Picture 1 (cartoon, helix red, strand yellow):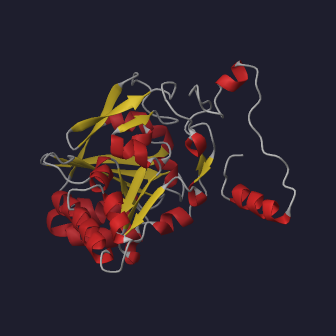
Picture 2: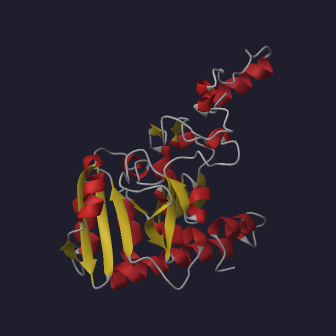
Length: 296
């Protein structure tokens, strides 16, 4: 079970009280392995430093935790913190082992979306710290170069905005990043496999449904997001519940079979719509859908 994808292990863990500790132990072990790999003797301090700085880990190490360990772990660890907490992370976790290191590609790609960015190097290991322009680190996450990268993790849980893309290593270009990438290109590296990138979703074979990249999504109530928790002390839920981020991946959907796609306009047809609710039951359901930003 140790090598299985974490969502599958979580599903087993939720079946009974006996299985739940097994899931918690596996998830904690995967996080500890990453901590020890990048911070050595300081690994035990990482959970509390992330908690106090209101920060999280993102990038390929989160994908490693979700998909399961292999023989080719990521060489870099990406940390995001809200405005005002950059020095907390640098002083507590990085000064003992790491030296500042220039990584201009990452800096140029996301510089306009960051208050501050710095990469650090220790032997072959690289840690980057990105400080958001405001108090919400989700502003950095939703503007990741690809949907495969739109993940975050604390010492107690993980969130993936596009879990299918993350686990398949195959995603779409994000709203702001990766302009130099071409159709079918590769970006980043997870377990030795470089993630495939699609410029748009015109080659999709099925209806996008509520996952359509042109639909607005509200982080706090998005039901298509994968959320896994294993330690209540450092739950990732706090970051999500305090976020006001609403975003979409693209302005238009080019999927030919999607009912929300731009092809509907090109064919002169109107978008689908829902009839006015006629009963109290339908009204309550419509209010719930509106609250959760469910497309109608």
